[in-house]
Length: 495
Image (cartoon, rainbow, N blue to C red; front, side, top):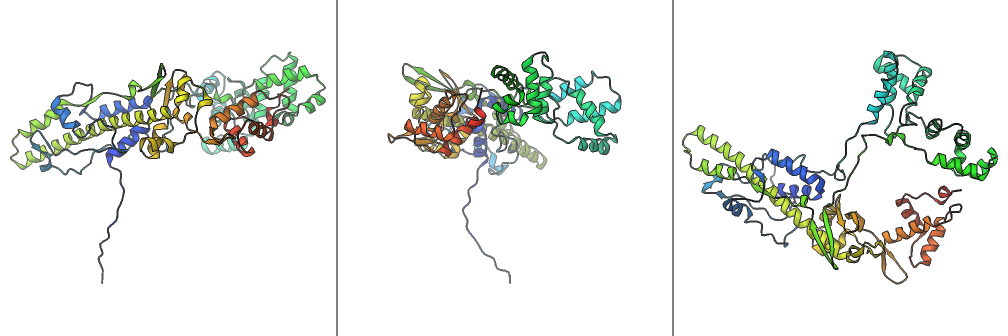
């Protein structure tokens, strides 16, 4: 016998308004203007400007009082009636059909994406140069296959035997490695220098061969890369000097020639790489010791609900509702109009909520890092984590994280990403915590001033930092050094 049971459960779900606010909160100002333009295009009930009819403004602003006493997402009201027309007689108030849920703003996969500048691609440049060679159809097909095998950094890492197989299976062209190498040599003469190399050693040699061969430093550099590449990568300069029987000046000049070469030739003129630019979301100014925080003008757009759409409901309220066909037509029209009005109201409220949350968070950051914003001295940065700001503004850590993501602030001394101000704390001998960024700056200073022919090891750096009062372990020194993209001592050695 089948039994029926009743269970009660509590579930947390995000409303469409909350989802809209979350997505708008995490995009930077550079993307906000484009997002607003998209919404204006798809929603005729939304317009730009400040001149809103008082009747419409009162109807849509009753649920928003402009105060800071709100939770992370705010409260959003529902339309019960509009100018005497009972919308409930036509549709359910919980019906969100037609609301734009997908592709609205930034998702988790692309939240770190930045605006890009389009340029010509590397492949287009190589194909154009290939056209200058007088090749037959077979050679051109092999050349196109080779160009297609070049990776973003300019190297061909796919084995030539595999490229021969690709030509046989995909284009019915049977060739051998000798013919492919012959065309590869021609492609390696293209710009930029070093393109089409199969490894770093070949890339450097290709670039050196284009330099003045009468220069003794260039000639020596070719010998170093050709015969002593392993010793060069490990910086065993004494061994190279003994093998080639050259003096210190010649070795130094040759190494200088090599270090000025480009190890990634594909990065030049590659339009596939993102050329990100920074647009400040906040502006902090110092007025005689008083710090003022304002939003970028593009962060505070003026939007209103269309007067024509508001009046449209009045028009349909005065129409004759007799007849089933006419009643159905009115219902469909009212449904469409209400959805657009709801979407416009939600979007305006989400923009307002975004502005308040951004400004509230930034003011808290400025108060926390007040000494830094006065003069820009990095040594005055305090250890600060997301939780510190979340507790100050009484919001969730995830909300602060979305605000800090891809946002930046313009001060009198430069533009900084908000993530710049968040750092861990390092204990000092005085009992206070120092910012990890402060420790990194000191570590960078120590490495810049170290003897070039005898770099400081991580152990020595640890002891120097301990002498300055920073209680830091060697593994932490290594972690900070790697975050600063500074190689180990052996690879920092110079002549």
